Length: 112
Image (cartoon, rainbow, N blue to C red; front, side, top):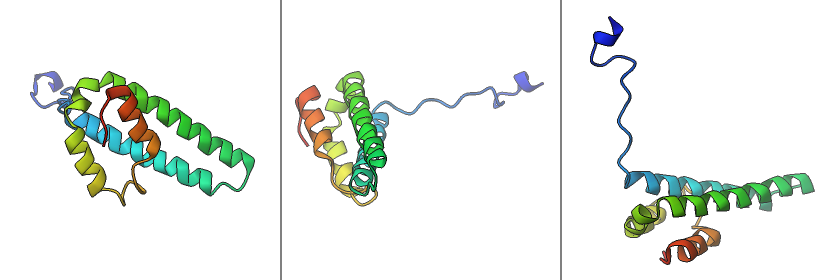
């Protein structure tokens, strides 16, 4: 019976349109990079500082990987990404990190 119903639990939702995926992905990475930077500034011990710096380095690696993976889609969305980053600055935990801007310039050859 379950398989005969058109809207069963086995029906998977369609994936989001590709143009919205990179913007959401990059907004999330900016927020996490800002959080790692804040954690590094507020670190009270060497262990906390090491964790925050490691998280920041990992996020930068993920960012570069995502930029390569979605290069074509991202290059076409730089204007929208710029608007979204400006509009959500407070929710993202501050300005766009320099590492993010540098990665865009190095990997895609575009600037915010």
